[in-house]
Image (cartoon, rainbow, N blue to C red; front, side, top):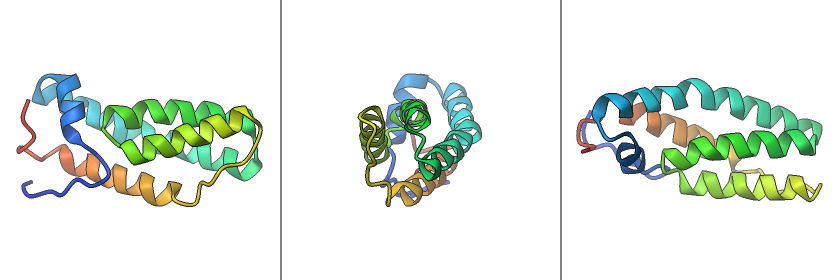
Length: 117
């Protein structure tokens, strides 16, 4: 896949961490498999206003989004985590859109051979 435009992620962050193409793909697949589960748990916690769960799920998902260079989503998750610790709500209006864009870009980067080690 060529000429992919990455706006929500920076695949070079993951490539630097991985060091080689095979590890890069394995880590990307790990994100694709596990991040949606964490996201669903976070959404559920937000709907229940379960602050401890919001904090836990935001923190866990933030770790994964950091690895794929998803700075905007990572910042949003950080804000949710901090608000949850303070037992208050936070603006999560953009959460779903941001997550879906990041997930789509991570899916695209798996086959993007232009990402160099």
